Image 1 (cartoon, one colour):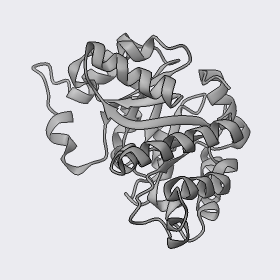
Image 2 (cartoon, one colour; image 1 turned 90 degrees about the horizontal axis):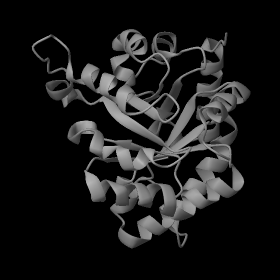
Image 3 (cartoon, one colour; image 1 turned 90 degrees about the vertical axis):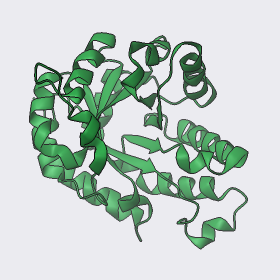
Length: 268
């Protein structure tokens, strides 16, 4: 299924959910029963996806947890993507890679994530400018997700830096990102722990989707995120990783979040 804007909106409306599950499959935290498998990360991901897919509109593997395992980790990531593609083709797939380079290097990153792995979207650091995202935007029905305002504690030292006109760096990125791409191919990362800024960020980028990490283990307020950040089409992919995948009952945790989302979702 093509990862068009309308297909993403349709999935949100059908499932009454904005849930993105982060497949941060840390080999040191995976339950022992999966470690006995030949491909433990894939076996664990297979289980998590089957348990949560009915409540989920996106999955977001964090590349670090696979890259750290070398060639086998890459193989298990490819197996995971292929499994989701074959069994849950409607679900949006995000490579949480946070790449950011120029020219030919960026072109090869795009080839890796969009051709070899067949992800729908990839997270990018925009620090090096438009050259970072150009090669990715050459792919039809593929998306870039630019780091905007992130959840980590030390982000403010960079993202709140102001120019001579009082414009913060993350605000500048929001403006540039909308010049470089469109709401049909460009999203922004906005951390759930920064929910107090979401209302103004939504005004600054009314049509773009936001990827919102920080719900669950990081303590983000789901109600504040939805009420301040949603638009007429939903406009949010709200991520939970550890709070779901390492829960005693992942299906129950995913359903619980979906039920809360449905409560606050209403479409015009």
